[in-house]
Length: 280
Image (cartoon, rainbow, N blue to C red; front, side, top):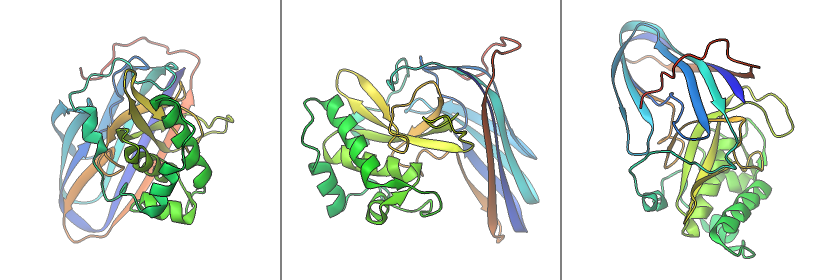
């Protein structure tokens, strides 16, 4: 599938901020399931700093904005060609050992209800089957309903409410997978459409579970599927905060507001086959 992505994040401040430093994880991953044809990142008034590939295989860029300023726009656009790998993350180079992803965070820490959910999955004959069953259990336990949770909502809180969004599904799946001794991590990215074909004009998130002998396998409980050619992978982490596409700090007393617009559209073909600008 050939996808064109436009992603814009606008930060506004009621009082000018003096300086802003950001760490951006906004470059598509390098693996067999996707190829980046061109990709541009721009920060209004920003100075691009050094970039590096971290131990998880994600490309990180540093940016600095010298104020005073009341608005900063982070704009990303590009074209990515994807193919279905049945959710398996093949050809992705990383250094962190999978067992590091058994570590809990505040967002994924299990309570009694999450432990009961994890223990209730008993009809799996192998680790891959267990991962699929855990994902299905999370899908059943948490209904997809936007606007009912917030960024800092934990997996335990989302399960108690019985509703949430893709972030909550991912956190809950990570929690129950780790309870069953399966390394699991949070993945940020984009989704072209839902399984039913409805447009999905937002950034998306899912989980990856490490299966012995197979490697990292993606699971999207919010859509009851494994990532396929509709998905574009950006990066990963222990939870949503750790895997955030944009992290930063501003010097000043202004109150920050945030607007995000994402558009992912399929194109029949790329007019030019430009060389990938993804860092290797």
